[in-house]
Image (cartoon, rainbow, N blue to C red; front, side, top):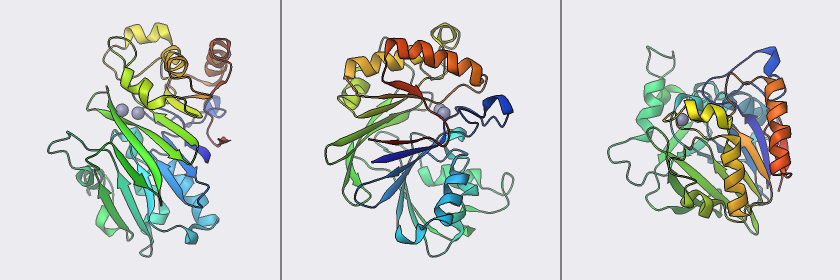
Length: 274
Ligand SMILES: [Zn+2]
Ligand SMILES: [Zn+2]
């Protein structure tokens, strides 16, 4: 499995020159599986370039591309109106978010609303591609021709979901936008157990976290704690704070590696094979 980071920033995109190493686009990842299929995780502003790259390569070979969402906060959906492949009437997409217990929440309406004419000139249904919305009711399901996915809900304002994605003996765990209230959530540890790569929210420093209770995020130190408890092989720190520039993140990365050597702060454009 190959993972490409198209957006690593949290909350809002930051197109400043002091942010170019770690990147300014918000959450978006491309997964390439050994079975030849691809999937996308989160549709933040990084999705614009991801779409352009797919069109420049060979999108024709991929039908019904799976887009899994952690949740529908702006920084995880704002790239979709700029995703050029969705303007092609020949294409199919399935946008999925684990939906157990969401009651009246409707995933389609979250996407429709951000494209209402007061916000955007093109309505979702006028884009062209066939876009299916899917809220799986069970925490285990398959996507992209037999890829096993397990989801768990975690604490975040309005809720968010983590995903364990397994192909054969290889496991990726994606856990963005999570806040721990009374210590690390054992459900997240169970989700991440023995993963080859854990991508985890690391928006804050431990000091900042004390000032940001209820904001819905973790510190890099908590991400390390999850990695240690779960015995993961590699850890990618993700969802960087929009006020943390490259110099600041490079320093945090050094500190983090002293605690957990097999870790790195995710950089936009980075490709990781697991
Ligand atoms: Zn976010
Ligand atoms: Zn969020």
